[in-house]
Length: 413
Image 1: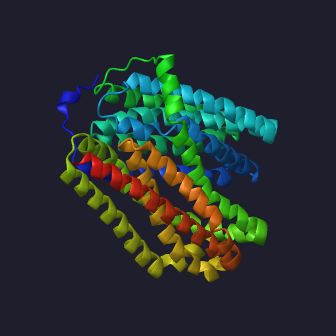
Image 2: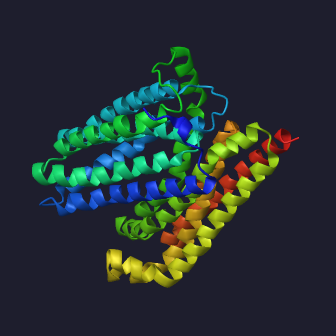
Image 3: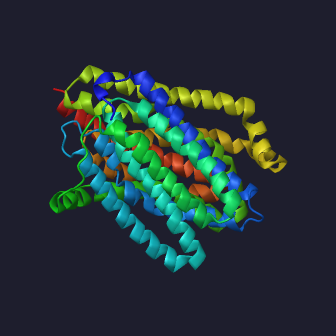
């Protein structure tokens, strides 16, 4: 058992660094698995089944998460214990898993259902470990999180390469990967997190029902905000064909890294925001806001410079010379990536300080603005998708900013 009294909280800079390093390594390893499934198989069938499993799980993962990570790291008053958060995560995992199975049985082949089930178990175990990570972050020891994410990523790649190479069976591979993920949680994360807080599983039905009902609107709002970005792509495909969507998605994929970079800036600071808000430390809260805004603005300028110098070369290297004529798509995509980062930052910040109405309204504004701006797609085709999403993100940020300013003005008096 680790004696946590031997450890001091890390600085904000160290926590941000560990979170970024761990997240990038884990993300890169998950991306590498999608490459390995093609390289190690004799055809593209398993790659398609893997992509299908990832897509189906993505639909139901928000139900498993239930926005509890943000709630947990901003729980500065001990509203719920570590055991209650873990028990609630197991409950939402079960709900998401049942819904996922029903959906998969109704929409895909039996073998694809089996692959989707075992892949989802593997990913749900990773989301369960997130409960430990939220506790680590609340105690300002995100080095534990970074190292855990690095372990998850590297062992997943090594495990996938080994298991799939010998079995050529995705079901067997992801069953074994699930055991690896569980081992990481038990051997590495559990002893470190429980040094902060004793773990006693269990949650009363009244408290579980309260959490399910209380946070259901912001879960639905998160789905709405995600739909605000995905619906314009569907409109593009329906009006101009799948090839247009394929080109747009190929250009947008590398830019998504910028959005993730923005989240790496603000996510480690959410617990500090909650603490300064509850302590009515106006100066600290403003300082954190300045850091986030300055950091994300810096990401935007650096990204613009990178696209100007390397954008065309990167697209051609990744997808071939046919992407040479679509470099123009990158510049508005960078603006969108940063704005989307701001939108989710505002949303998470409002949840952290318990202004749930603002988070909900901001997400609803996003989907309404997206629908209103749909005609831009007919005028600007591929760039129109980006313009619609930019309009959606701007409207959402503006709406949430109003709620945030009102909350801060009434709180810091």
